[in-house]
Image (cartoon, rainbow over the protein chains, first blue to last red):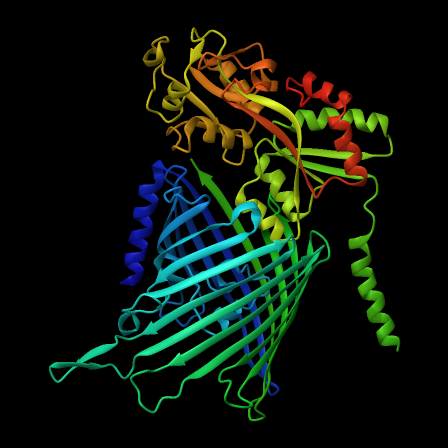
Length: 349
Length: 270
């Protein structure tokens, strides 16, 4: 049913946007994954991991929209293909008396850490996404914009908090605030951070005809620190993520804290070839020893075609990943991934 | 030991070409308005310096600035100022866009030579380009449908016109969005009911420039900013120009270079 609704929404949008300047964009990820653990082959598969179809209508210069659906072939959907709505938002610029700002409403980017501008330089997801700190998009509204003279960006938003995948009982009831600031004090040096308060479940539920505290209520306090250093053909991106989980209505629950330290280096050998390396350290509970895992990624991106603005159009990604556990009970996992990404777009006027 | 030497040798093979000197070559891309200035100056400069090779291509101001941000050209031509988003991206990538103003220009509003119209106000111009007015008779002209010819959105000329005339209002439905000044000039010159806008340097005998708010685009009215749709033209570099690129920019800004600017129909920055 959800797919039918989405398909109808797509048709309506296409029809509605015929009179507006609309950019159509499609991005496909064809991926081969070969995964082994303890000498055993766990995965050896081809899949269309992503098929982003995007419409960006422009209703004049002050109102723009983005509607994005994500097709995928390998998530165990009954009919062999899945479909998710990823973006459905409107940007209103020049509405507020703040230069270079915009108001966004709808299913929009989550301005946390680097998840909102992660371009998959590694095939692996952004750390906030991979370790499930936040969803890449969520329902909400926010103000974002640019600081004067290229000194950075900011965002202040309020989200539902459940992301774009959850349905039914996982739908949130509270407003989750977020602030994000990135500063570029010196050309090539970016520092910034995000803070988000998140809740799941109602604070009170009805029990025996009266309202009582909901024992399943969860509260999260999350922060991200980001640093990027670009010099010549190389850059290093470092992140520190922290998430504190509490269940305030459960008496014997002890708060715990998750952390991620991630560092990624990229070296652009020439216009065709990038070399990339990444190292993540994930600690699911800072009070518990030997429960963490480390991820090492090494790879190359080979750009076969770029557009006139030097943006990738067709490129091949090859990544080697090794996931190791601090606990000796678990065997390390190794993955080799090859991915062909192709992107095409057209503007209808 | 042999392995270490092999790894170092392989790394050197990869890294050395990145830092290797690119020879006496300058690459330029971007605005189609600035293109004739860049081409003519490049030809003269290469005549004077046969050892220097300058490659020039168009694409639009957005393309010029995007390639400066990506570090893939030495000079990004733009007929508009860099935007906040572009400046932020550039600084984040370790690029410091430096604006070299190389010429002044007016955006001439042009109609077919046989059109009896001679003048419009900025307000009338906005009404035409937003589709509010669709027949010349509504602005004092002949009973003839107006064909609106505009520029594509990656064009700096479009950005300036959009900001100064349309004030960011949505353009008329059905207007032709063309990729270059030449294309606009040709289309308007061949279409009796057409109206378009081009850099002053692209005026041809088939076109008639209209006065806007009573002011005709000319060297004097553009230099004094009396003409309402005037602008500066730019060559962006990463930081203040150095070495070979500085030599070329200095030439464009020299009296000889500025004479070329005038010969191409633009206004010098003197």
